[in-house]
Length: 89
Image 1 (cartoon, rainbow, N blue to C red):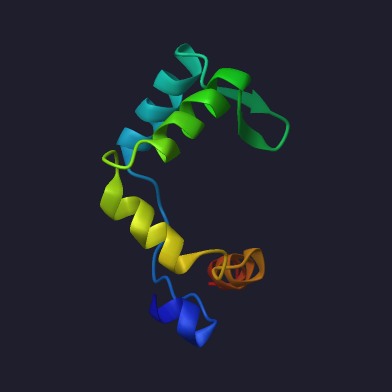
Image 2: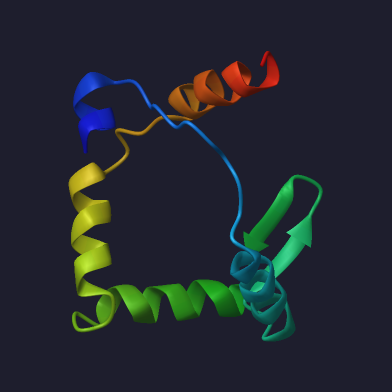
């Protein structure tokens, strides 16, 4: 939330938990996401699944509140600014 207020995203390190790769492979196997030229995207089944998650108020309630509070205030430009700093180090 501080990044939203300051309009600056400060991330000292960037990496992925190995569990993320497992989750992505699982989602592909379940037909929820597809690989594309820029990365990954929701499949039609994934979109249906996501809509169901959003509709169910009991599922991921805290996470949904956090994302709603942050909204779209973390911009792509903020992420690119942080990432470009890593490339120069």
